Length: 126
Image (cartoon, rainbow, N blue to C red):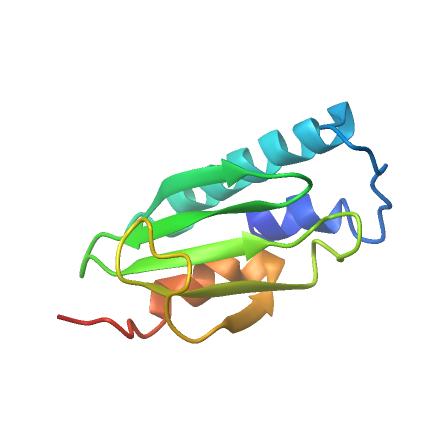
């Protein structure tokens, strides 16, 4: 089982505490998520680079760059208080590292996010 899938499966069915500020629980989740993504990229997808990481109010997003063709993809893990983090997560092509609107939304299981991006079509090919 890949690092990301294993980490997310540990949170399957987990109910995160809601708060008006960042909780220690969410801070720990974000650190584990980022480490799992980096580990899986290093071990299984060296053509990918976790270029931008952004932690919001109970959500995480960022950009992943594919080194071989320069394709950029935006990803988003929705509000963890209301969404199953191991379930469907969104990604899409992006024109640059500030393109939050990007191409068509695509969905994949959270544990398969990096594998999906590794083979995804870049809608903004030069």
